Amino acid sequence: MAFVSPTAEQLGMYLGLPEIDGDRADLLIQQAVSLAESVVKPLPEQATAVVLSVAGRAYVNPQQVSYETIGPMSVQRPTGSGGLYLTKADKAALKSLAGRGGAFTVDPTPTSADPSPTWPIDETYFGNGFEPGWS
Image (cartoon, rainbow, N blue to C red):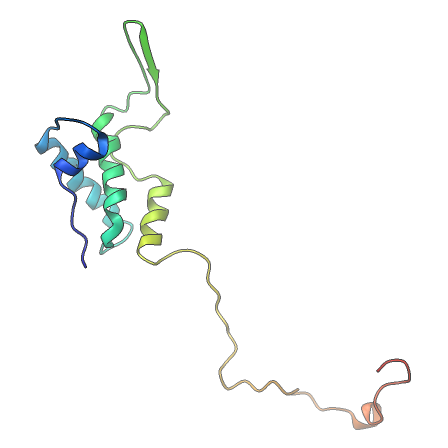
């Protein structure tokens, strides 16, 4: 099954907002999909979680505010917590969902390889086996 872009309604549910600006949400989702496709194309079906995460960050903190005080309340957010961007974890998740990344092994041995020794065996030295005690 192919990737289906999430809707503005789904972004609102993801963020826990009773109302959401549909046009703005659609724009952010579209841009989040474009960013995700810069890492993996075509996007896997499960990439919806990453797209919602990217669009959600941008929706709740578009100006990348890091410190805000309103009356007696103050909030400090980590630097770079706003705007539209992919984190390292987002990129890793996209690659993992697409079946890329992770550890793998490459065996350079040809299939026609013979396990027997390829060097000449010196029959005079090894003819009677090893010295006593070295068996």
